[in-house]
Length: 203
Image (cartoon, rainbow, N blue to C red; front, side, top):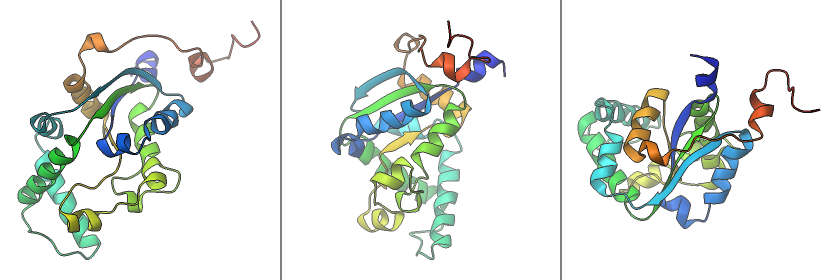
């Protein structure tokens, strides 16, 4: 990867309906800005259930991997499985996500900067808030768990979606934003973050 491209890595972040309802938008964006990531696109929308399904199934393997991951989580926690078919479990997960993500407005944004995908994933914490580390967004602001969401028959409420890889980010950004909605601009702080010799400080 070229140095310029390396510093311009982009990732998609969605503040989910519970994040907006709990008035955590500013706090969530602040976490990303504090580390040096740049906001290059943002919008509020109420996504349709079909759009949410398209979002989560951009990866043709999503159903298989999601089902298998959920089965492993159930077994690791000693919980009873709703069934042992990963595709059936994935369909339950998807239907719950469609209800959750279309229940109210969401905020979609693109963040740019070095290691954007990994940095954002580190800041937000693991998918389940209960097991997210203290200091992460999910660990600090949510008390939900897989056990509680499964008992209630709903998606786990964890405030945020973030792309899991550079390839996934490219696909998700293309789904949520048109090229004209993404703004290329410079921030003053980028000179401190990326200038090799900090040449501009004493000028």
